[in-house]
Length: 620
Ligand code: ADP
Ligand code: MG
Image (cartoon, rainbow, N blue to C red; front, side, top):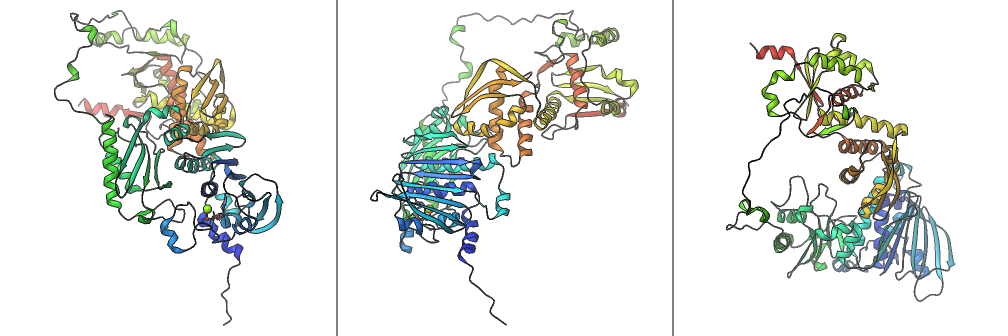
């Protein structure tokens, strides 16, 4: 048989190897930012277009490269950072494999401009699919600019595999956070599609955290600091009261390199034991300094996992240190057996004689009598309307019900019922009248008679379903009524949250929001969906951002879905709110015009029915 084994050509080998280093635009960002740090840069600028799919550019003021190095840096295993295997055990640089640039050059259009301090003129190189297409002298400042265009242009399968822009942007921001947090003394800037996302000046760690996560972060931070023979720890943890439902702000850095470690995470979490509400996670920014010889960072290709020689000792020390910090800043509860605050009387009341509380009851009040001062079907009255006294004379609940119902029908506003077929199938003709009689119980459920017995509807979940379908329709058909605000509302969020909001701006505008500014830490709203109260806007946006942070939607569709769910949750009428009779009916009609009236957007049941035959059994 003839020989069949061949050596793969370099560019093919590079493409295959690239798969390990470059999974997505964010991987390129990480490699380029780290190279800039290794080159001793004091200012690093990252420019992104279309979530990095079109352009990723990193500009630094580091040491630059000579003509020859500029060409050599794209060769596999070309590195200036280690010379022998021993150096691997004494690493102070981020990179050392000499693989990143070779890999990137195999799967993108790359342009490099670089100049060292010593030379007067710089070098410019362009590479496509590992082949140098031009190299010439150029005028450029000291440092390096590397542009990566059209990532995966020659591997369509990989390109198609990329997620939506918000998802890829999110990954890029994560990498940007990690590198810029690890190096607060370096100034970083990030620009996406022409607008500033981050502009971080040289600072200390605390300031860097605040600059990234927003000015409100400062008060949340508790300093941590401890030094032992094997490890030095410093950084911050969040006060437990600020623990979040998302795991977003959890960072370990070992020798200024971001790492993931579920083991160390466990150490920190256990220090928070008993201090966190269920389902919330502690936030932390912890920097560990260890002897480079006592770790192995070589076990993971993208270098986010490392192995410690002395893992157990580090665990114990980390747990104790964080616990100590929480205690020292009196965040952990302090037990004081001599004092029970429960018995303290507020100062102003200490000399007053107590008076028995009185209740005013309107005995002529009829819950079914129409309140003409407030006849809008969509207005909900706050507070409890049924009192004990009314319950006692239960007959009064039914007196005059018939007439009341008759006169009421004349006043009913036009119901917007989109599909009569649906309602028709649930309520028989002879019983449609009956559906006009609804009761609200415990300001939570709406009860209505149906042909086979009775139906109980959860008001909050039902309204969620109605709003969800309405919002989804608005987002896809792109029509929504917006209400212009007289004075724009201004909000401050963290830059990350603002950047996240930027990526869903368009969809949000389809629901009726109008933004005049989404930039830096600022959001300015000058239009809200019709019917939304101004005072509820901050809560709505906060809920939305926390939902977005917790669950990163993959596709345009799931993004709309998440938005609609989140908004529906915020906007839906809450339990505990008393609803006018008309509002109850309106809700039922709207619910049954929905495509899926029986489940909430989160798949909880919206209504239950009870058969009259079930009642029959109870009366036997
Ligand atoms: P590694 O970082 O593992 O050495 P890379 O492929 O990322 O491998 O880079 C190869 C070499 O190119 C580096 O060792 C360094 O000498 C040089 N280099 C890369 N980026 C820069 C930069 N921004 N400034 C100066 N030199 C750089
Ligand atoms: Mg590198």
